[in-house]
Length: 309
Image 1 (cartoon, helix red, strand yellow):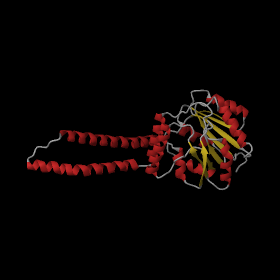
Image 2 (tube, helix red, strand yellow):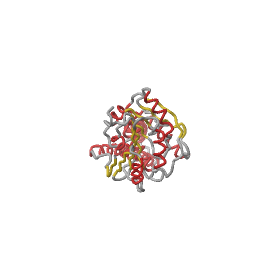
Image 3 (cartoon, one colour):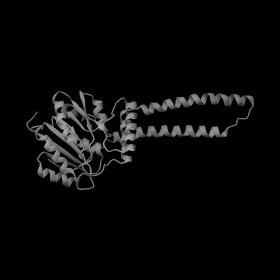
Image 4 (cartoon, rainbow, N blue to C red):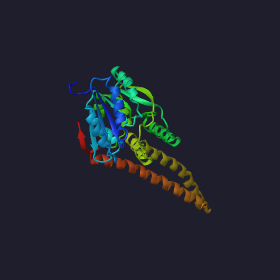
């Protein structure tokens, strides 16, 4: 470790969190001062419409350990997180949210496990806090589907993780533009230790995750980590072909016998079902083609407008 390299980097992506940022930073620094001899806190403003960048500059005046990055627009949490990770310099890197739902009180235990030899210390949700039934059900459905399609179990997973520098270096070699940090981190492997935590109440503000954004993230997560849906369409095609074969033989037999074929409703229903499945399959292939298109363009994950060190 060089003299200028901090022991710990804390990476926090921010969006519309100006009102409670000072409370968050004070609590985190209050915990870190007695734990490590040197640290930095990398705050990434993901194009917030409020004065989050101004709040970061205020914290920089108070604490030298603050590093600030402002993106030119809202690129999304995953891109903001990538920006912070690429600029983190610590021997260990801690990722957490800026609303205190990831409790800083857990940091000492995470550092202890890292110093004991764990490469990744991942905080797993024991309870999801004050989350409504629809959100809870949506999460269970997504993680259940993701596990079945990819073989990677992310039940209870969060972005609240402590990584060794070599894990981050491996993560930085993953160059895809469609990011899903939890899945990418799990895919890397290494020696992993889980530690449970209860999701606390937000320090302030509202979540920036709308239903549309969550659906987009879910699509990115599944299509980035599994081609199983494409093979599923082949299975569906085989099933429908198996059903169509006896119907076709029956129609041919009745034609040869000279009997009129009744059941236009059945024919229409079959056309509608098969047409829907074909359109669904084309749309699914289109999703994967779109992912390929985004990757081959090679655009940067984010654009930095300002930076303070």
